[in-house]
Image (cartoon, rainbow, N blue to C red; front, top):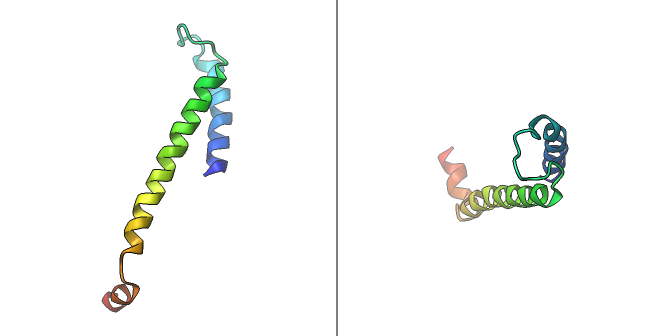
Length: 68
């Protein structure tokens, strides 16, 4: 997950130059905005992993193996 966040941050910095003309009122190198986006994506990724993992832990492995 952290490798994806780092790759995304690098890609965001690279794309920053391309879209800087469309950002009205926001400095093109606003690190606070970038860190807030990274934090939001990290939280979303953690929830996307946590919720299915909790469901799986409630299933009986023996029952699952017998059904297959």
